Image 1 (cartoon, rainbow, N blue to C red):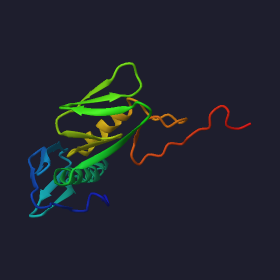
Image 2: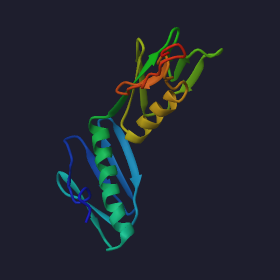
Image 3: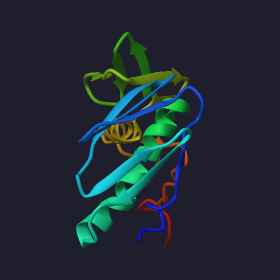
Image 4: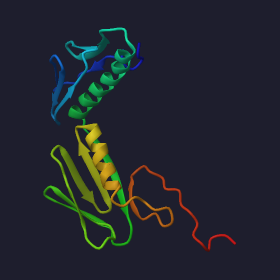
Amino acid sequence: MSRIGKLPIAIPKGVKVAVTEDMITVEGPKGKLEQDYKPDVEIKVEENEVTVGVKKDTKTAHSYHGLYRSLINNMVLGVSQGYSKSLIINGVGYRAEVNKDILSLSLGYSQPIDYYIEEGITITVEGSKVTIAGANKQRVGQVSAEIRSLRPPEPYKGKGIRYDDENIRRKIGKSGIK
């Protein structure tokens, strides 16, 4: 039995969890999330907690046990608290600004790059710090990875877009050591 899968998920106030035959719906103050699930697991909703169990004693059912528990927990945390990631833009002339649903980035290329912000994701810019927030953990991570990939940090001067908690291993240039 999965050590993660057997833990119950506490449902905070203001969050509603509904389970149908093949779909889990979690609704809260930050939004509404849906997830389909395999029939190998059973999901029970009590008053203030959700438990995930296994219907069949197979290897695939046990692998889904911990997976769906983690996904449901992420959904409950997302609609109640939300998720966010921060990016730092470092470089001379590198900047970002948000206009309605477009993030416009000047990253040293000949033309500015426009990144279209999808529904459910909010992006704020404060100086050289870009904050991506939303209820869906996977989408917040994917959007931040896509923005970072537009100009990854380089190891010589550290120019580019990096995560707030990321450390860049710096290299010495040509004339560094003799």
